[in-house]
Length: 269
Length: 239
Ligand SMILES: Nc1ncnc2c1ncn2[C@@H]1O[C@H](COP(=O)(O)OP(=O)(O)OP(=O)(O)O)[C@@H](O)[C@H]1O
Ligand SMILES: [Mg+2]
Image (cartoon, rainbow over the protein chains, first blue to last red):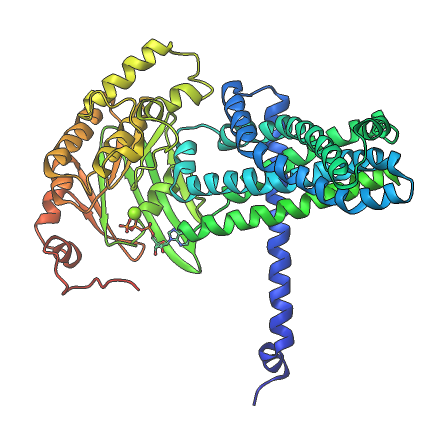
């Protein structure tokens, strides 16, 4: 005789529900840990406990490894978009607005979200695997035993470098993207450079530039924070390092899309 | 009392890895901890230095630094040997700015000479052999002049001469600094040369406590099996 409860425990519904509940629990757990690390990192930054040498080193690493891929992704996306729309717009007599359209697109959305994706894949994954490796080889334990705070030592310079460098990378990528749009519209549909650059400023306001930079600051800091956190709680050898890296990439992707939505609602609704 | 552990319990995955363990280590005393692989030796050290939280029980430590030499060295692989050894001097808030760069260089050179690795300051951990890494991690741990030192298998994987060097150094350091030391080890030579007392762990419990001499006397079924490395006896490999 099995009781109803036992029967229920063996059922697929119970197993699926339990699995989902576990997933949700671990989601909340991760969210809590990231938040806690973020608060602690911010505390150190506001108290000025910053090792600038290390920040500069991390910024250098950030710039060098993310610029090539960010530039190519942003300019290629611009080329794709411009080759789709420039032709039609010129045909319909709207050629003088191609520059405006592409600039709005790059400054408001494309530049920052594409840079974000490029930076997640280059910087986020490398931060996560670096810190996860330090965790599973007990290097973080060693830092703690030597009475150095690992958040201050590892997180602060990396998060700061994200906050500082992502706007820089974004500005360079946007400029290059706008130029790439000019060249490709010119080649694809014979649009003159003069009419492209003349219309460029029509749709762009200070607010757009400001919001875009602010987004880059938030994205950069968030990517670095999430990636460091995912690495920080890694466990279980080489496999754990891989899992932490995957988690960092997924969480960062979702986080910047959420940020982006937040900005869209807050500034452009 | 430098380190006192009372009724310590640590549970991992519903198993008591440390099961009601109590012991004391006085200043300038060295306690050896022996036992099978997986018997909870590293866990005890991590509990004492605060890396892991106990589920119940007390750990009482006197003030001052506690140092740990990790089982697998745990050197920072992005830093060279000199920066590894001087890590605490550069990064710890209360020690930063206490020494000039020149003094730090001298301290590093002195510690390296002590562990028999003069002049490798600029090498990176990946360029060193396992035994050399172990000795560097030894130098890194003691650079702040700790008053308790935990060694997790300090001599395993070392050749007999390097082992002797480390063992002598454990003893010398204890005599000089009056530090309380705990040495986790499998090696009889390390027990005989360094330890004042020995405890033996099996399945999370203490199954023997005494001097190295008493351990060798083979009056206890557990130590007898350990010393003779026999498969016959009360202990079995845990799954
Ligand atoms: N973080 C952890 N999570 C789950 N179980 C763990 C963890 N750390 C240790 N254990 C378990 O605790 C037990 C004791 O591990 P510990 O590392 O203390 O053994 P040890 O005596 O140091 O062994 P060895 O001589 O091989 O180093 C093992 O069974 C191990 O599986
Ligand atoms: Mg161990």
